[in-house]
Image (cartoon, rainbow, N blue to C red; front, side, top):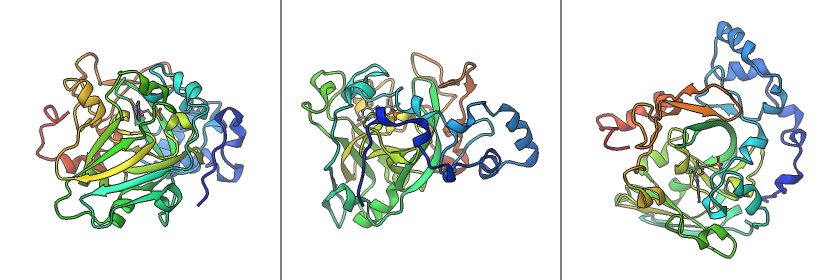
Length: 315
Ligand code: MTE
């Protein structure tokens, strides 16, 4: 498969999705599993600039008043410390980053380790468009139409051995191409991890695109993780290595501030960050803050993975 990347600055909102792929307002709400009454109520809340926000893909775990965050916000308000620590830095500083060609290493406790060119790595998985809630630990949120493949597909192909319990992910380390890595703001390269059952969960996506287009550099080109029931920092960008392990892997934020960022990082409105509340969030583009949902609204799908665990200790 050929991965094409358009320069984000060249994209007009009307380019993002072919008109034929837009969901109508009613289709959107129906796809979100809403009743006729809810459709009527929610329709009244639909913003005027709906057409710019309609997006390809199946809505997962959305609420009646969740609307995709416009492309402009998804691609200009970013966290990607390899390209600076301000929200506006990645769109500017990653402009000249050339993500292709790209190699992904799959290794560790697997029967079939290997180094894959990105296009081979993605084959033969099916790219899917899925619209997810995206909740940052900083108490802001978005709704993002991602495009990706299930991480489970990739892991199954590699055939984890019986001893594999966790999956560790690593971002590219290349200070010449990622200028933020010249400063010790985090321990580089950025790393993340999941328990194997979390990694195999059908909601967990390896993402290659957004709004039906290949990922812009600032969103983690050419390949990033998205785990919608966890805080956004678990969504490691520009992944070059996926390693199956028997021990819980170190993660970049846990290493830099262990009392603030744990391994699990499940969205949980009842467990505050030591410096701020997690009970509410500011949806980018909205004025009033909205309540944060347990597991970011995905409790029905994922809560059973944590039954019996103390989520206050395992934050
Ligand atoms: N991945 C890398 N390699 N470096 C980063 O700084 N930031 C994380 C995560 N992935 C980060 C990263 C944080 S804090 C968040 S909230 C999300 O990316 C933001 O994803 P977005 O910019 O696409 O919204």
